[in-house]
Length: 137
Image (cartoon, rainbow, N blue to C red; front, side, top):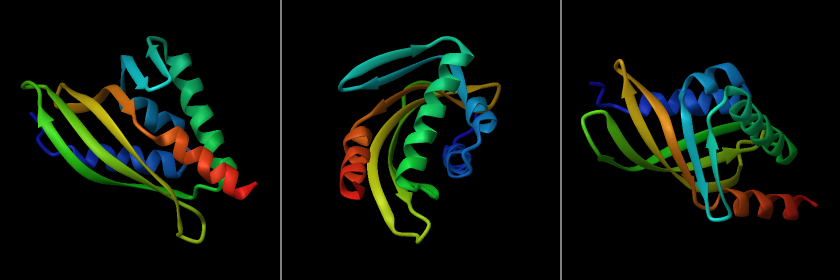
């Protein structure tokens, strides 16, 4: 049973920073649930998940995100194979200035010794993104 979840999030951050879909898709186990204040989405097909990440990539490109990094806030063992993880994301522009930060929580499941994302809860990502868009307008 893997204990350290930071390598999982480093791969996640690297895939986002490079705008690479295949490695990002490999980190998700379907079905996967996305929860936000304004919506609930159940991804059960690879194509719908791909479209979601492509939309995220487009938003990040629009505001000039060049790199994503994270800071682990907490993790809770839910069961032998499940962890609930809370972290802060930092999105940087080309000048290495922080464009915006946001809080996101994840439920990860170990499947054959590999962590995979089964649920994510976005807290303030869209609001933070919108503030950057408005400031750049």
